[in-house]
Image (cartoon, rainbow, N blue to C red; front, side, top):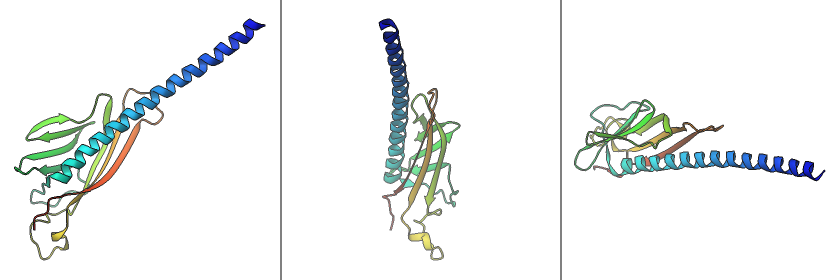
Length: 164
């Protein structure tokens, strides 16, 4: 009788322990994904705040899939989705921003105004607008068996550079 009770207790304990271990791995994977998403978003926000939006003389797409910036020396800084990777190009040298096991599902930049506000135009009411960028990014954890393996972050950042 004691052996039967002991077997039931050990079986239940083992099952609870295994369930806890699976839950712990899922939690760690989601924390890693959320941390990566916050770090990447902070990098994009910092660059968009500190550098000038590169309008290139054209009206920008809405939404844009590329965020093109110029630093104080007019060197290009470009954020873009390349397949399932998020690439940053600084002075024509590219690097991935994503850690291993994370891939980019979606990236969109909504840049306002869509025309260069630093070129004076009396017919356009946005010619005096402060530039800002709304960023929407969805990252996905690969290799982890999660019920929810994506995280979406959105933020808006105004550009500190204003030429008037």
